[in-house]
Length: 159
Image (cartoon, rainbow, N blue to C red; front, side, top):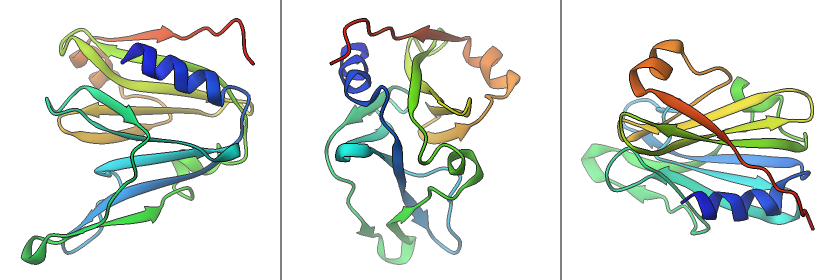
């Protein structure tokens, strides 16, 4: 997974964040705070989808599309533009400067990424407990409970 993230980072470093879509579960209300999947699009249409791995914790990044679904009496999953949510709003239009991988010692896997933008905005995306969460600052209780480690990705030969 680290290599996949590194390859993605190589393609987005210095690029502006264009839009973020979420696959949002809707039963009676929208659960916009915990999308089923995220799709992050940088300039030049560089797109990746973030989701939870099959174990419920591991971060999964790929370039497959998000797909809406009707779950009948159990609700539906719709793709929504969530770029205007406060966590993301100030990063849209800004260049990505730094990326860190977030590893959980407790889960023994990569559970997230930390994105830092040119205006000093930070977005943390975590896939803990079979759901996606995002923060500008990860709550200390999560950092301690999951024993999170932040591993910087350094790219020296950017194209």
